[in-house]
Length: 271
DNA sequence: AATCCGCACAACCGCAGGAGT
DNA sequence: AACTCCTGCGGTTGTGCGGAT
Image (cartoon, rainbow, N blue to C red; front, side):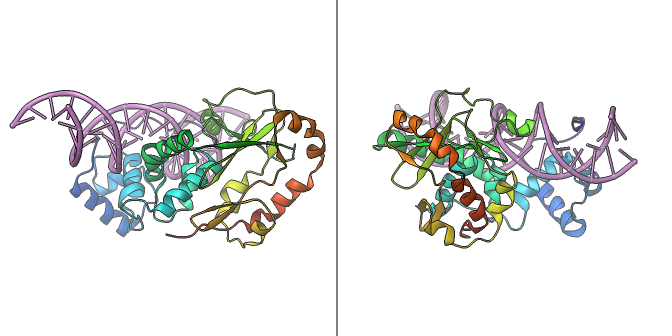
């Protein structure tokens, strides 16, 4: 609840870590683990705040960190996961063994975002609209960058991250943007919301899944890995889609299928 | 050789949730 | 119930490096 007290900055070092500091931190954690980050620097004899130690360990010193540049497969996975999850870097990182949320965030902002923007502006993008049905459980939105976010039921922290989200639009549409390598599905509505249980993001995406689902639903393929897409009715234009909102809205079996098969979502490959 | 500029990445900051009291 | 403490997350900033001028 309460906010963490400001790190007492007096006497604490900031900035890049030295090799010696790294060694102290590594040896201390190897010996004692890190049951209490706040107390760790004091016990280890480091002039750093616990937060800094934790970050250094998690993002750089952890033995299972995979250093080096990202493979094409990893980059494709990040792009696709970002389409699905938005800026939930920690969730994305959980799907990429050896990579940290910070690293993925950096790669996204320096490489992938630009690549995506370039790609979308230079390629012939075909857009098709979809209708969206109202469902139960949790609301699902997409922000400006096509990322998935959840509005009213989100935590304040998550809501904060949606600050640049455009306000509600009148239409009730999903827009699918087909590019050469993957498909982006975009919601443009605040009134007709799709609902997905919160556990979907953390639990189901990390579980072991089979491949049955992809055989009976829309699928996008990235580097040989199939990803299920939301099975919604393809519409040729907005007017037509508006006329069909009613029928689609009543077709709850679509969402029933989604939630039924969530457990069968294919897991991402390990790199 | 010096300077500028952009990129990549490490690190920091502020906020919020959860556990404990 | 209210408060504090700790941890984790995501956005942002700082810094070093290499290439261009």
